[in-house]
Every structure is written in C-alpha cells, then in structure tokens.
Length: 496
Image (cartoon, rainbow, N blue to C red; front, side):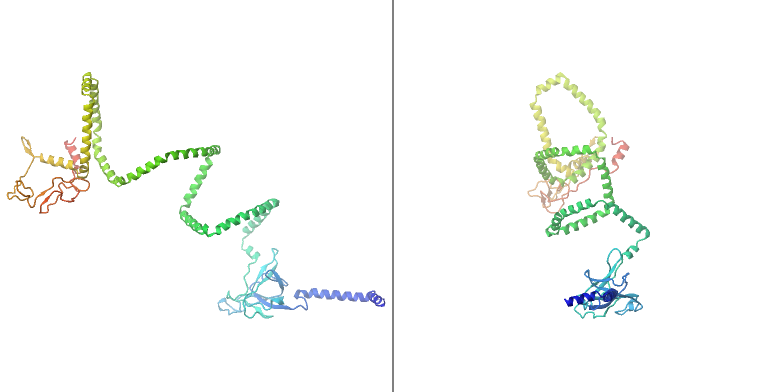
C-alpha cells in the first residue's frame, strides 16, 4: 500500500509530469527530423549511383526492387563531365554533366552484384518518381558499402538504363497535336460517361468468349492446322494482288453500286425461290448425266480428228477464196435456174409426162438413181485422197489441154515423139522381148495419197525398177493460174 501510494504521489507532481512530457516531445521531433536520413540505430547499406538524368527525382524518393521498397534516396548531387568526348572517354568517365544519387538500402542487399542496373521510373500519373534497382546475376565480388556504380559510354558496361519521362514524351508533340489529344481525351470521357452497365455487360460477354477463343487458339497452335503455310500463302497472294490493287478497288466500288441498286423485296423473293430452283436443277442435272456421258465419249472419239483441223481449215480457207469469183456468177445462174425449174414444173403438170412416169414406176428409176449415187460416192471416196493430196484431175486436164494446143487448119492433134530402142534396151521397151530390159522403169499402179504422189515423181536409178518405186515426194505441179493471169484474161476478154 505504501509503494502504490508513493507512485501515485510521483504522478501527482505537475513539475515532474511536465518535464517528462517535454522530453517525449523533443525526442519525437528529433526522430521525425532525422527520419528523412534513415531511422537511428538501424544498419543500412549505403551506395552511390551515377545517372545521366535525375529526371526531377527528389530527396527521400523510394528505392525499389521488383516493386518493393528497399530504401530511399538520401542525396542528389550534380557532377560535371569527367571527359571531353565520347570517343576518348575511358571506363568510369562520362562526357556530359550527370547526377550522383546517395542511397540508403536495406542491409540484406549488401553487396549488389557488379552487373546491377538501375533506372529512374515514374511512380504515378501525378509525376512522382522512384529509383528501380535491377540486381544482376554475376558471381563476381559485389559493390562494397560506400561504393559507386558509374556511367560508361560502352552500353554493355553502363549500369544506368535510359528513361524517357512522360512529360518529355508529350513535349515532342506540337501545340496542335496537344490540343487534339486533349480533345480526344475529353471526348473519350464523354463517351464512357454513364455507360458503366454497358461496360459490365461487355466484360461479361468477353468472359464467355474466352473459352471458345482458347479452343480456337489451341487449334491454330496445332501443327496439323499449318497456320504458317496459310499465312505464307496469304502473303504471296496479297503480294500478287498488290499490282492490281487499283483495279480491285474499282471492282469493289462498282460491285457496291450494283448491290445498292438491287431491289431488296425482289432479292428476298429470289432467295425464297432458290430451294425449289436448286431441287429442280438437281433433278435436271441428274437426268442429263447420261447425255453428258455420251457427249464425253463423242469428244474422246473426236480427239484424233482434232489434229486434222488446222490443215482442213487452211484448205477450206483456200476453197472459199477460190470460190468467191464463182459465187459472183450465182445470181445470173439463179435466174436461169428459176426459168428451168418453171419448165420442170410445167412438165410435171403436163398429163402426158405424168402418165409416162406412172408407166416407168418407182422401182426401176429409183433403183437406177440410187445405184448411180452409190457408185458415184464410191468413186469419189476412192479418188478423193488422190485428188486432194496429188491434184491428179487438175494435172490430167492441164496435160490433156497442152496436148491439144497445136494442129493445122483441119484441127488439133496430140503431139508425140516416138522413142525407138532397136537394141531392146531403155525405159520404153517398145518391142517384144523375152525378158524385160535391164534398165526398164515401169510403175503400173502409182500410189496417189496424202503420204506420197508417185506419178511423175519416180526417179531413174539406171537399174531395172518394175512396180512400186518406193516412197516418193508429195510435191506436184501447181495448176492454179499465176497471180494476175485471170485479171489479164478478163481485161483481154478471154475469161468471162
């Protein structure tokens, strides 16, 4: 009881209480004053770092590692350049004025590796700065307490990472750009004002989209998808289309005009009728499949004839050119033919001619006519290749006409020059002999076709050659009049 009463008497003394209170306030003020330089009696790791630009860093600014505060900036001291030019600066010197920062760090960081790097960074949009330290991974001896990380013109040895301040970045824009940015920010604020619910819905919909998007990205990442090949092909395609980009733009513009001109109700009706049209088209194509198969067979059969088309077309062109003068005579012939047909019509109406044809009957006359046409067709088929390839009729007519070009007052005659070989030798062999002449050349049935024209092209070898002389040339004399002959004949009145 006495001890408790003594303690109460001490606190009842106003002088003692006042003294103790003043001492506590003085200690608190002292601690708050020196706290800027670190708490007393707390061990720190003190180092210095050189920075090219302090970037408005202030005293007592935070020093952070990985975002966590590990110390503070105690001093910021401007320093002059330590060399003249960048090309002549040795390691540990700097050609421009710089700032040296004194740091008080946690003792747990002692020592920092020699490849440690640092950077002045922005703490917030309000302009606060802090120093970010990025400890290195080197196992060499670290920086001791009181040591300095210096600047170097060699990027590999420089510890300071360059920093571009936000206001410096904005300062690159001119007044017009700055006004535009301010306007864009203001308009963006007006755009998002009062749309919180819409943003919430958007975020929710994006959350629902993440699952399918993840599946899609997994599909793209699969090697079997060959996305790289698709991108390479798309790149080649766009590169090929780049030269014709103006044409494609014009095409798209015209297509837009065309689509805009379409009547929407009519287009809808057309779309409504598409299923029935597709069904009908399917049935029609199914029914036409046998016809298409037959057409394919016909085309395959006609392929060998395709090789003959160029020659046939060339000859057809020559026939058309040659027949053009003949066609000019068709109108007069048509008028005369009309007169002849009128006479035939009157003959057909004559009762006497009708009775005559009835007496003849259909069988004999028809059989005779059909037999004549069939025989003529066989003859034409036989001589067609000889005529088309070797021009036998033209050459015979020309030679026969040449044989009739001379004569006397009584008429023309065929010229001949007898060749007499009294010894029984020679190609003519005019007289009978037991054996053929040793140099006799005689081709009874010359080949006349598209491969060879033997008549008139047989060569003389000096030895006996009876029958097929072998392959010969297809070159024959041209019986077409030389250019200008017909015109001169017409002018002279010799050709109608």
